[in-house]
Image (cartoon, rainbow, N blue to C red; front, top):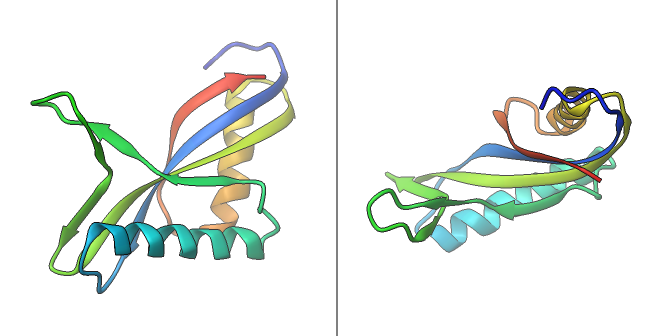
Length: 118
């Protein structure tokens, strides 16, 4: 980030999605992806790819799904990716992606995972 080349970028964001009244990780993931997809599609953002995020276990190094369930409430790490065209810089591409996705997913925390020039 910080390179002022301009152009097209692939921006990957993470979202902290809360799902209530779930029994297991699969339910939480399916509900989170479905809810996020509905909200994105309502705003015409059907081109945003949605997936569940993974983390590396600090002890064993294995990848684990980004889902945590406590008392029937899950926090799911969703990965949202989109292409941004004609951005002035990587920072500009991030702002565009966060703005577009953020409007659809109001009140959902978003963070930057990766930005790649196309």
